[in-house]
Figure 1: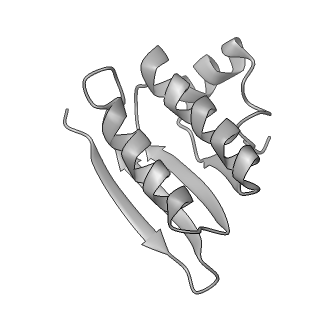
Figure 2: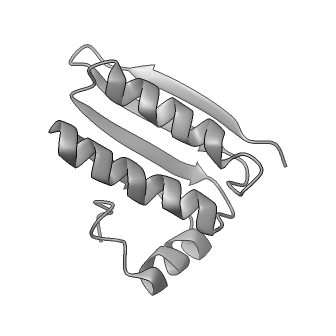
Length: 104
């Protein structure tokens, strides 16, 4: 399944990066590029919406954690929203839920 990424910017410059499809080694760089563009574009905050992502591998998780670190260094909040149950389970097992700002 191909990865589709949609980026929207609100009036307050908060950016939502919505991914649709599987995030794996073959396409994780696309997600990283979209997040980096938001951070470099002066976003006041970045939300990565995973509602339509049924699968994420370790490369994709590395992209999310790296984005959270880059955001923190830049003073911008980066958080993950709406992970599907199986994606959330993997994030829980790896202990990165709080680092990614995922609400309970």
